[in-house]
Length: 175
Image (cartoon, rainbow, N blue to C red; front, side):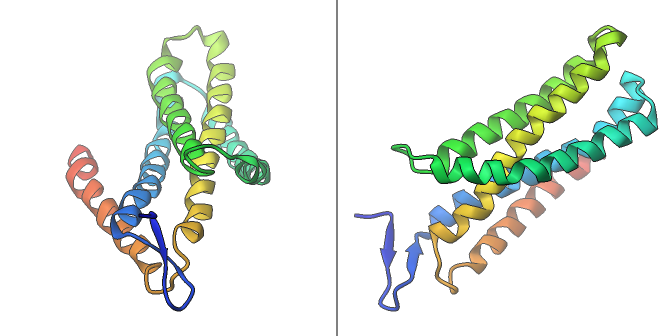
């Protein structure tokens, strides 16, 4: 049986579990963005980079993120695999984003001062590539998974449940 069905009105319908699991990718992206929000405190407080320098680097990283998005779209369009066009890029993007976040927070402050800034910038660039892969797939694949207007609100419902669950269970007790 196919993973998607076509309804009488011509819409592609996904199974509820597919939408539920797919939405976890957006939750993962939100979690990465939340963690990245602490990088300025880390870079200035623990690493010792200047506040203005750190702010400028983070702003440049966001601009870089916007510049590379069309390239990521091109990569998505050209990707064909036995797992489809989205799943490999979603997994690769998630691994890159999560991996670079762990590396930034666990390695940067241990390096010699002369290399910290270059390493920090390089890791942010790699992080933005992974993050862009992950978030671009999130938005592009939603319409492919289902184009049924009755199913589309399920993304927001699952996303809200996941984000509230993560926020209340794991994040807020840490703060």
